[in-house]
Image (cartoon, rainbow over all chains, first blue to last red; front, side):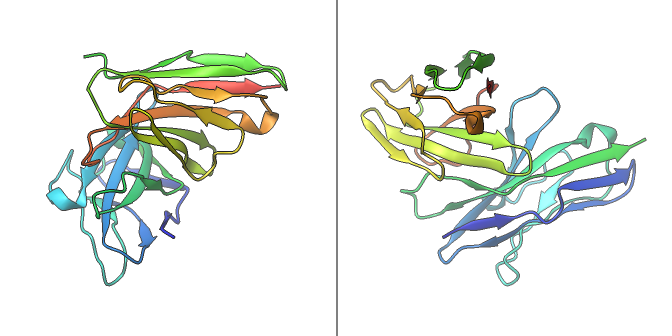
Length: 111
Length: 112
């Protein structure tokens, strides 16, 4: 069974400080990892996915298969980054479209 | 494109009542799914569909039914509502590759 763990329910940082949202997973196959974000009163939306190795809104995430982690990082947090962040996993086999979500981390960036 | 739409936005039911949450998408996505979001629990998959006429159960399917008669629509039915079904419900859709799921605005359901 696949599982996604986000150990922090709440994370609070000051503006300009680095931020790291942790995500660990367990899966026996070849996973694809994603970060989704939900800003206040907005829809859940894709932030980034490991396969594209891109930086979105200053956020990056590297898949570490040895540590089974996909932590989300940003060197200088902004107040507009305050949101709920979900790490998600799916089987890369192609026939399985199901996403398994972690329980989410609520990030608050204080001025 | 309207994307993924959900109706209603809010609903209050009494225990035992039935209702249907509507979900529609205009992006010709093959894959559609229903999640419920509860505090401290994240998003949990209820049911999903990989195409018209094909549905399957997710992680928490009990108490819910779905059907997929068209590519566009994927309604979620509560046959006999229970207080444990108080939650925010999200519908999502994606292309077959599943790389990005597009979410609806959600339906906040309260069962008293």
